[in-house]
Each structure stands twice: as structure tokens, then as C-alpha cells.
Length: 51
Image (cartoon, rainbow, N blue to C red):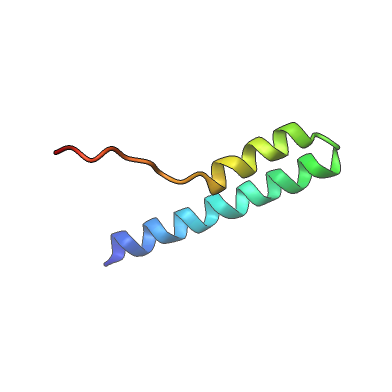
């Protein structure tokens, strides 16, 4: 259980850092970089199913 808790905390911290980066890029009018960072946050993991 401790490992899952640590992983969840690390993930939340990473997400917070990404939002800070997006905010900085938007205030610097760097929309391309902000969009790229946002895309990594919202990207779904598409895995192939092996049959």
C-alpha cells in the first residue's frame, strides 16, 4: 500500500508541475509549447491487445 500511495503522490506532483509549465508558457504567449504540454497530460494510452 505504501508504494501505491507514493506513486499516487508522485503522479499528482508531476501533474501540478505540468500545470505550472502550461501557465508559464501561456503567460509568455508560447501557445505551441503550452498546447504540447497539455497534450501530454490528456493523451490516452492506446495499447494493442495481443490475441
